[in-house]
Image 1 (tube, rainbow over the protein chains, first blue to last red):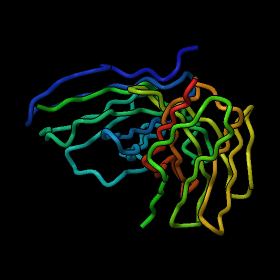
Image 2 (spheres, each protein chain N blue to C red):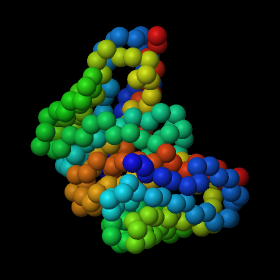
Image 3 (cartoon, helix red, strand yellow):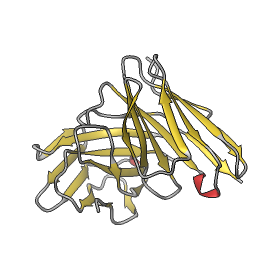
Image 4 (tube, chains in turn brown, orange):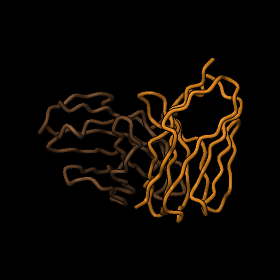
Length: 114
Length: 113
């Protein structure tokens, strides 16, 4: 059974560009959460989507946006990239929106902004 | 401000040693607490989840405890092995309404053969 899959695994962008990261949750999981992990730090919560609606948002600027599709996959979009956006972006899925569920994380998309 | 702290940042022990990793949180009104493992350049693997009403959880050689009143959790690893070398992260949920977790920076564990 496939786990949480993320694409691309690595990418390099330049300042000012736009990036789209993709996530496919575990089959049967309806919730997708996005986290940003800067080198040497713990992950920081960006968004949670459940049943295609935003259910939680972290302290990130409006340059960050996301959406969830009918098949529960999700995209994270970042506009006007800054050097500080360089990080590992992690996607996690769970069965429901509840905080009681264990999150299953993907391997992440490593973004480098030059 | 809700903060999660893990000290020390790194730890090196000889194989076979029993060890304790510490986690502290500033706001004791937690919903649950989870311990994760992260291998270099990889995603996170959930190890143990403790609900706020529980005091501990066990899985194999791992035991996690929770003391809400003091704002502390510990992860006990018995008979450590080189394969246990990884970064261990503690994460707190403050609500059941969504899956937002507040993470510590992690403790990088090295188990020497």
